[in-house]
Image 1 (tube, one colour):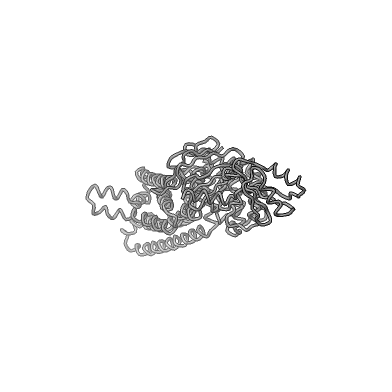
Image 2 (tube, chains in turn cyan, blue; image 1 turned 30 degrees about the vertical axis):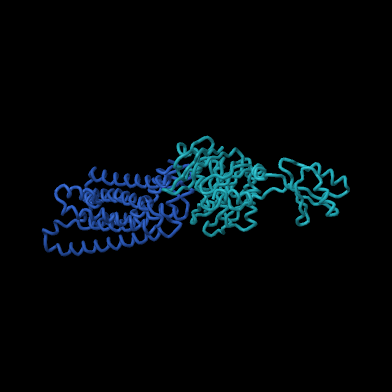
Length: 306
Length: 255
């Protein structure tokens, strides 16, 4: 759906992004992570046709952004970091104007606008001037603007920036609800947001891509050996000894009422553990795989490059 | 084409969302009316005096003593007001960040430029429409040359188009509206005063400089002279301005 190849953008001598390549498949939500000034916005601006790349190519739905910009723009919706709003216009007339220049046909326009007003919860402010709206509503108008022409690809630059927690939840759920119908690139600083919303992650630092994977794979790759955390009802010492005696278990540690079991490289003794504990008459309350958090991965990848 | 109209309509309306259009039209109409009144009064005094000098009465006519000075003055007022009309066109969008909407929409840079140009041009036409009562009054109570009136308005329209295209360009090079206004006003002033340099510039220089001057060309229109040279001058000036604007906004993408 979106294909970016060896994309480089230089602002004079300053490098915006360098040699960035990735793909986004149809229906996916891609989380785009990176510190401030890493090149997220630059990449998004190139994909949406706002900026031209210095070298490399980007294509959306098979159309190159440089040679067929109008085809690309017809198929993309873009919410920049600051929603591009005409403050002197009312919500309805603003959306009407956007629908017009985005090429929504006359007969579909009314319906399309009503639909986004409904979807984005703008019903009670439709006649109000945008300059009189709160930040949350402005953000929603920004999202409405991006989807009014029902684009195949949606590029959202920090869509939850500056919203209150309830609004953040609403916007996230809203983005999730778009999954499947639209292909979405979403940039953010808020890592849990990525875990909640996205299926794949891209981490960029100083203009270069440092990680690109599905969330699952990213976690698995990062983990060198299996770490389990167990909650067991039973005598502490007995449990410790029992666990230690198992094959494939390297170390056992007690922490906050849980047993942390570090397994040997390449081994997965989970079946063994369950069997042993159950057969020895103790109660296994919980067992889960201890994955590194996205924060840990993020910090690690970012600092590796630095 | 349709998208140009959409953009023009939106831009034209947005002049009226803020007080800009009302203030511009009100002050323009007031100043124009004040000038018309005074020029007419002066004309009447001269007419009364001329009854004693028949040779002067012969030379006294509405074209030379009312229409030409009136529209000459109006063109100077327009030179002051057009930069105020055009300054917001691009500068405001850049400041508000709405360029990101416009440039990521399926509308190309030339359509954006032309659409914005036309919105200011429409406001300009509306503004000079408020001066139509003057020739109507002259026609009712006097006997002015109709051809001169028509050619003067034609000249105003052509000259206005070139003012606006220059102003549009000034707005595209900055995100500060005040700078846009100052730049376009100064450039208009230069193209007005360039005629002065012609007197000191030798034979070829004289021709070049007086050709470049806005008002030399406008003078012909107020004489009732519709010359293709003047039309070509204003049209090429306008198109060149639009082209420069297009280049400017397009080049921003590549920087």
